[in-house]
Amino acid sequence: MSNGEDYSKWWHEDSGGIGLTHALEMELLHKEVSPFQKIEIFEHKTFGRILVLDGLIQAAQADEFIYHEMAVHVPLLGRHRDAASVVIVGGGDGGILREVLKHDEVKRVVMVEIDRMVIELSNQYLGINGDYNDPRVELICADAADYLRKAAVAGDMFDLIILDLTEPVGPSSSVFTEAFCQDLAICLRPDGVVLDSDSIFIGRERVQFLQEICGDKDENLVSVMKQKQYLPHISAYRSIVPLYPGAEFGFFLYSKDGFSYAEPFRDFLGRHYNGDVHRAAFALPTWWREELGF
Image (tube, rainbow, N blue to C red; front, side, top):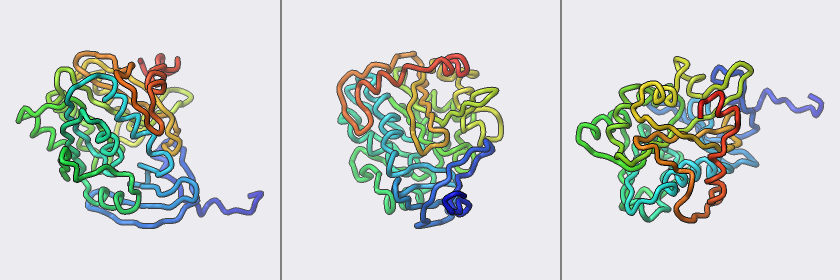
């Protein structure tokens, strides 16, 4: 190296089979293996504390607000509701919950996270979480696929279901199934919406999702929804999240009625989110339209 630095000592993110990785010079603060996954907390001098699950970055103090604000405020502000019920699938770092609770029209929030240890360590080290003691919140530490299956049988329905998932291996593998997609559709109100998201990579031959690269097959929830039509209407918007692999990040809205969420019904100002960003996020590049079909 021209500057004499040995970059081999840096932490490298699991490439997930894509042959691309982040390399960060940072200090390991805590490492623990839960019954579900390996959990690591690092400290970076520029990006702050970083949550890593099974070798993949999940949240960094420096830029987590971009993802969390765009995942929550677009679907909640894109359609007026006097009262809204929300399910968060995953979300152990607590950032999605934090943003959801900023909306007074949200009257009920169920957060279903399989790994209590992720919640506890994120609260302790990252401090980006919402208030779990808010009376609107019901925290359930269980398999989200089991929860939604039971909710579907019981006839429990929601206005917004946010999928804040790790990649389709380990504890998240149970939700990347057709049965889970069917239960999503059953639990969604006729005018409700499901929010899904993923990192997107532009390859020489085709565009790929991180879900495809890390999973057991070239498939993701977007392709399952397109093929099976459990929720027949799909729209998309995008953002840039620097510390996610590839930085290009897609958000996908699944619904029964095809309502457009591209126009916010009221003003809201976040650290990243505002009305102009909301509208602009739906302006998709040509390659999105041609290669991803939006």
